[in-house]
Amino acid sequence: MNLSSAGPNRRQFLAGGSMAVSSLATAASGAFPKGFLWGAATAAHQVEGNNVNSDVWVLEHVKPTMYVEPSGDACDHYHRYRDDIRLLASLGFNTYRFSIEWARIEPEKGSFSNAELEHYRRMLGTCRENSLTPMVTFYHFTMPRWLAAMGGWENEATVDLFARYCERSAKHLGDLIAIASTVNEPNIPALLNWIPQFRSAGANQAEVSSAAARAVGSDRFASMLFGATEKTASHLIAAHHRGLAAMKSGPGKYPVGVNLAMSDDQAVGPDSRRDEKRRTVYGPWLAAAAKSDYIGVQTYSRSRVGNGLDLPPEQGVELTDMGYEFWPEALEQAIRYAHEQARVPVYVTENGVATENDSRRIEYIRRALSGVENCLRDGIDVRGYVHWSMLDNFKWIFGYRPKFGLIAVNRETQERTVKPSARYLGEIARRNALS
Image (tube, rainbow, N blue to C red):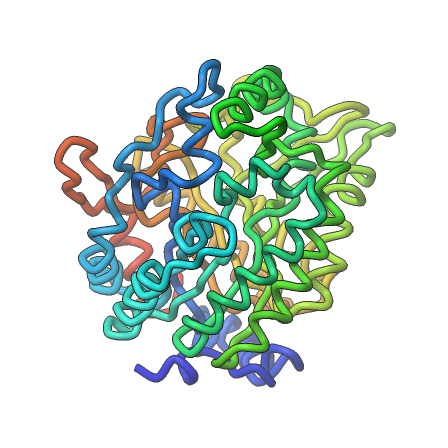
């Protein structure tokens, strides 16, 4: 498969293109636009296993720790990627979103591993061989431990180091990449500040960071997931723009965007701080996306915003295993808001639900995709839907308990079991239509 023809070309991305025009007719007929991307996603640390040079590996093993368990072998995707990619393709999907791991590629400052770059090149080649469009994230929450020991994103020097990492990686991989994003959910520290359950989970953050700093022989240690928003936001925005430029300087011509964590924010009461939340959590990044090739929307539920933090779910509503409200309709509203603000093409780069009841996952997918159809009917340029996630995997501080995957993983044997939801979404992908 020639990936240059797997989706819209760069001119279409920048100008709206023929895909945007065709979306009206196809959505009206019940089909998705020709060339629509149907995929599932993973992140390196959550599935590869033994990412020993990363900051999160350190955080998992210090005492005290916020992590309920270490990632360990994870899903051993590092060694099993060929079978996993073939399985995804066999189910009917045409896209695989995954991340490359900075901590593997640059395990020590200035020392780049050609062997690891070749590993990710083989992953890209396997996607090509199986007619999957590779959507590559260059940074998905984890960084080399040496960089965290320098202060991570709180240190302005990280901007230059990230640009160098992007340039080196893109030079090696760019001719095989179809779509790329610089940073996954760079607004997550700001968003977590609005969610009470995450605020409480990070209450001992300073103590854990001190323990991590001692473990790496530094006087400071900063990770992205629990970073200080006021110290990291401007550096992350600068890194996005520098990273985008670095990717464009290498081989291959592919669109580059940024993926944002977004909820369907609903105002509760006349003194709701909803607009303030939107302005601070999304505003700077929607402006950055407006200067990029696309915006990636990553949505799981709604948020009810009162005059303080996000309100808890109303009594009696259905909850997911993460404690979120079961609210698939959030995706439509997040797409609409992102498009209204950024005015660039939209990809749904993450959407899913944590549940062990797979029939509820099927229902979630059905209702979420109905919302995508509504957006397409209204002329919004949505170009793909990538489900989170392909595999049940390591969910950061929550460990392996939450099940987001379309495919189950036996942690003892690493056996994969395809869930009915994977076949359901795969069939939608095959016919490029919800019904």
